[in-house]
Amino acid sequence: MAKKQSGIWISLPRLLSLPLPAAALAVLWRDLLLSLPADAHEERQALEQALMRHELSQHDVLIDQDRWEQMFSRLESLVGQLSEAELAGHLADLTPRLYQFLVHQAGPDPAPEVMADERRAELLWLSDNWMRRFEQLPFERPDPLPLMAEHLCRYGALTWMRRKGPQARLRALSLLQRLHALLPEARDWVLPSIRERLILSVEELSQEGELADPDQLQELLEACRCLADEEALTSERRSAIDGAVFRGLASLQLWRQIND
Image (cartoon, rainbow, N blue to C red; front, side, top):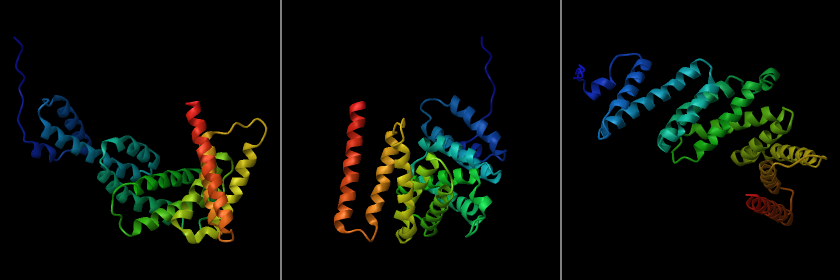
């Protein structure tokens, strides 16, 4: 006869508030989740929520340790488990810390070595991508957040404009397009910068032996759309640019459908 295992009973509220280190509590909660009966829906939900709060709290630990890359990777792995409101709230808390690290510490006129920092450039790119996702969420943003997003985008654009190579050029184009939407009054320097990078990208694609990547072509076509906003253009030229971009994107979509 199998020996009956002994144990103790503890209420769920008490279990969730035990004065133990966070890591130890998380191990305990995970073990309990595995042993819960199938019909323990409320207990399962409470434990899963507690574990999610623990996972999100670890982002603060990683940030304090200057491990931003791991924080972004961890956040990406949790996105599917978060509601839109939870993700938006977390990004709202995260944005000021990103701004402090990537914008405020650099100052209004970053030194050349700051602009040349590869790690900072990559973090600015990742930050802007998260800000774009943030803006798609149904969330009322506090007043400072749009300005912080615009600054992160602007510093990212300026950083990637200084870098060489096709990837840097495409990232700079993407950031410049977004900056044009966030800060229309910057068009006087944004549009010439877009035009310059478009010309270089097209020249590169026209070189013998180059095979155009459809995603790259789409990015270039979408960047062309911004050029229709140049104030010196006539309405006919604007319409011509819009029409050309529309036809190019439609052709690209058709080409993808045929190849799929």
